[in-house]
Amino acid sequence: MARLAAVREAVGGGFEIMVDGNQGAKVDEAIRRARLYEPLDLAWYEEPLPAEDLGGHVRLSAGTTLPIAVGESIYSLQHFREYLQRDACSVVQVDVARIGGITPWLKTAHLAEAFNVAVCPHFLMELHVSLVAAVPNGRWVEYIPQLDSLTVEGMRMEAGRAIPSDELGLGIAWDWAAIDRLRVEGATHIVR
Image (cartoon, rainbow, N blue to C red; front, side):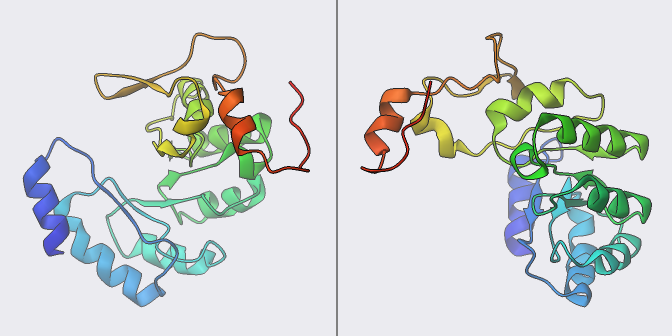
């Protein structure tokens, strides 16, 4: 709490802060922490419980005013539907690579829209920025610079906002020379 309070004080009320539980809590602990976090006006408490614990997320969401974010470890539209129908989350973090591609990602985002729930996809921000721009409930784009060394240019940012690429395709400018340098001898070669 001291660290989070210090961050809130340092950045002020106009800056959104998120907390990630990495699926590490039990229900009682997650509820207690969420209630402690409420005065800090966090944007969300991410994955406080294991993704399989739908009932725990229902109890947690009912026990706090803090938005609960889930989805990084959810792999089907039906699982998201169960979370949304039971009011077990307030932010959906659907991942295009884990949900099975662009079409199921869009279906999940539109399902969340039907429940008036925001979307903030997990990882692959260079691809997700265009998808978030395509849905009315896209609110945030997660930024993880893990692909920066494998791309010619990173995601474009202007005034704190992610800007979709104007280029054709998925919006990822791969650095093929960097990828080739990291290739393991004998591994399948990437076809361009």
